[in-house]
Length: 201
Image (tube, rainbow, N blue to C red; front, side, top):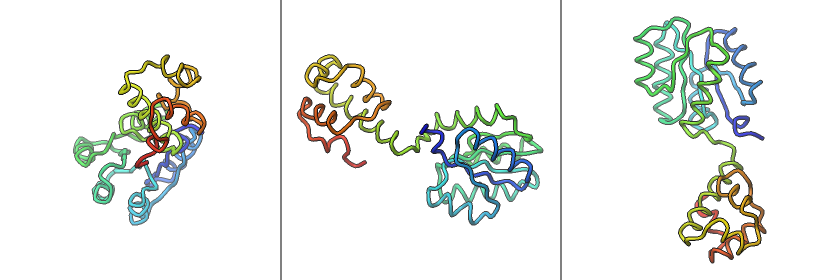
């Protein structure tokens, strides 16, 4: 399953039409989408780490939306929040961005625009929430660090393990999951314990 299909997005908006449009669009893109209007429930979900990205309506009267954004920041200073408004003003944009809103979109939301902003948020905020993909990146990073520390080239490590240069490269880049057998060969060649790859994970 792709990384983005694992991303949990919450839509917080009083406008039913916007909610339906966004839910359909985001679900079609493979994201997990939930809709919430109760501020307390929004905060609970964010606090529990069940949401990685919030699309939040800050349309006039903007105070409830901005206040909720401030409360979200109170429970999670890092969760990605994208503001939306049907009546854009400089004041509301500044207030939203001061509270670390990632971006500020004008409604009706253009499909390509919201897709581009979410993709940018995933890249810039490192919203890698697929556990398997995250583990692959950690293992790959540690493998590369250890190989370089031992001053071995990919080809030299391949020769020592009987594995292909391509496979080792894919593992180091986090693009391929290493089997236990493969990790054992790599650990043996690098003279480390297999647990090295998973420490503090």
